[in-house]
Length: 405
Image (cartoon, rainbow, N blue to C red; front, side, top):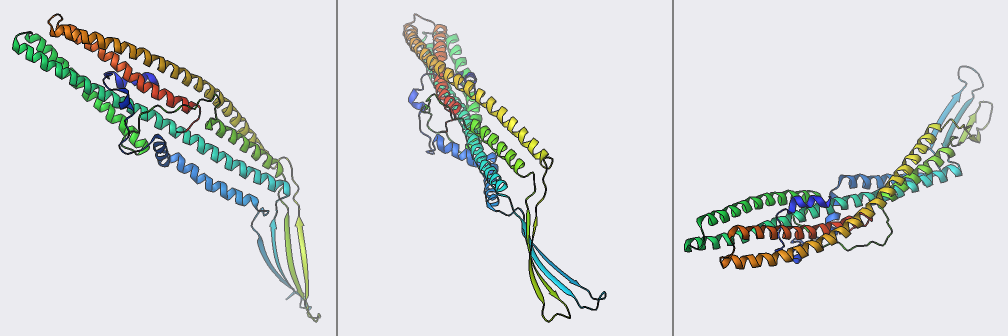
C-alpha cells in the first residue's frame, strides 16, 4: 500500500493520541509473525506448494531406481501336436525390464534434486508474498484505527467547547449564533466519526479475512535489517527454476537413446524320444539405437524454459534493486515528514492555547478559536498519519529486502 493512501484514512486524526497508543498490545496476544503464519496456513497457494513437495519426494524415489520400467513377466508354450509325430513341447518363463544407463540415471537424479530446490524456493517466495499482504493490511487497518480514535477525540473536544459556549450564551456573554456555530461543528464531527468507523471496520475485516485474527498486533515499527545485501526469495525462486530447466535439458540430451532392455528366460524342452526334459537359461539384451531427433521437442522445451527463467530472474533482480532504493527513500522521507509534522503541531497547540485564553477573556471570537482548533487538528492529523507511515515504511523496507517477520 502506498503511503499517500494513508491520508484517506487519517484526514481527521489528532495528535491527542500519544505515540504509545500506537504500540498498544493486541488483546489476542498475536504477533506479526503469528499473523503471517496464520495467513500462510489459510493461503491456497501454500496448499498447492505443499502438495508439490509430495511430487518431489516421489520423483526422487523414482530417480534412485535403476529400472526404467516395471519388470514384465512372460510365459510361452509351444507344441508340435497335429504337425509332427515327435511329440515336441517347449515351455518358457521370462522376466525382463529396461534399465537406465549410468549417465541417464545421474541426469534423472539431478533433475529430481533441482525440482526439490525449485519447490522449496517457490515456497519461500510465496511466504514473502503472503507476508507482504499481511503487512499492507495490518498498516492499512492501523491507519483506520488511529483515524477513528482521533476523530472520536476531536468530537469529544468539540462537545466540551459546545457545552462551554452554551453556558456562556445562557449567561449573556455570547450570542445565540455562537451556540449554533459550535453545534454545527459538533454535528459535522459526528459525521466524520461514523465515516471513520466504517473505514476502520472495512480495513479490519480485510485483515481478519487474511490472517484469521480479529484484532491487530502491537503497532510498533518493525526492526530494520538493512545490511545492504538482499536475499530476495523471488529471485531465488527464478534462479531455481532456471537450474531445473538446465537439468531437464541435460536429461533430454542423455535420453536421446531409449534405455536398454535385459531379459532372463528359463526354457524347458520335451520330446518323446528324449528320456528327460532339457532345461536351458537364456539372456536377451536389446540396445535401442538413438538419434538426436528423438528428444528434439523436449530439448527445445527445456531451452525455452531456461530462456524464460533467465529473463524473469534478470527482471526480478532489477525490480528488487529498484524496490530497495524506493523503500529506503520512503523511510527517509517518512522520518523527515514526522519530524516536521511534530514541530508544526507543537507550535499550533501553543497558538490554540493562546486563542482559548483570549476567547475566555472575550478578546477573540468563536470563529477565530474554531479556525485555530481546525489548524491544530490538521497538524495533529499529519503527525498521526506520519507515525503510521513510518511503521509502514519499516515494513516495506524489510519486505523489499526479502525479510520475513
